[in-house]
Image (cartoon, rainbow, N blue to C red; front, side, top):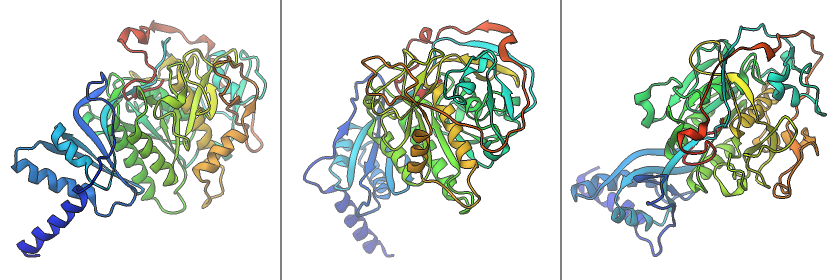
Length: 468
């Protein structure tokens, strides 16, 4: 293409993208404590008239010559969703908002894990896998989701079979990373991706939250789906903090990986997001919806603010499986978010699981971060029981989780009344061979971890963060 024609095409593209009567909405405040300075997410309409992410890159190069600041940090393409992560000034941002194909602009902000309040660090001996696992009171969460009525936890167990143990299902842990060397993962865990902003930390889990979540979803001893694959998608740092843009980057990577699979393997995956924000984040919600529309199941911690889950992202995403936390007493945990945006309740108090530090390290945590991976594990078990070559849509999986739940078992306060009274349940599929595993009650406590509140912010939902 000659120079004159190239200039003409560029003019048409920029004119189409930039000429508009009204501005796209700007969400979030630049002065918010969780805002990331001068960084924004620009989400384009579902079918833009031009490839606007490429146009923005071109505009960035042109405006740099005019001393206008605009740096394209990342572009996103998730099942029709097109967006860009930018660093720019206010004047340039206003020009972008005038593009007719821009759906919304949002201030990038911090995300964090949905963490716990009480934690105990322990070590334990390895255990041989068995079909009936004797859980004891230490692993009460497994026996609770395996029983309609509240069992006696001291002698209760957890039943599963090779028919639905999570085999050939990928569980993406979108979190602080995973300590893949832990013995509970049996070489079934591996590094998937690390967000660009965290590459300096490497792939390892320097926080422990992601490892804990992975163990609950798919650990051999501590997990639900004991043969599922664990894929680390590291989007949060050693403090359990990250950004919305980083989380979206991780979601896109997982969706792209699923799309690259052959038809027989596609649809056998679940993303677990035990993290949250301080409010409504439209760009994150849109990315999660795009992943679900692409056929990927997404499980989300409802949040630890003791508030309406409909007021916080990503727990408010209707098509995702939003999980609230329950206690040993079959009540909604005091910290758990609640309300109609919660789809299912699952144990989230005093949950023991794998942890960073050594191949046998464990920790006991509480939070919706712990409840969510229980659900992700049950999703993996359902998917692994499917006939090869068949699949279930995310909507059907959500319905299956709801339809098989134990109803009316949880005590709700008047404030929590709009919360669906559905407790996670998964029975054993097939004819199990009964065995037993050592009771967890005898584990020796090595040291106490300081209350998470000492870190300054409640581990619930603030900037993008983890949920234990």
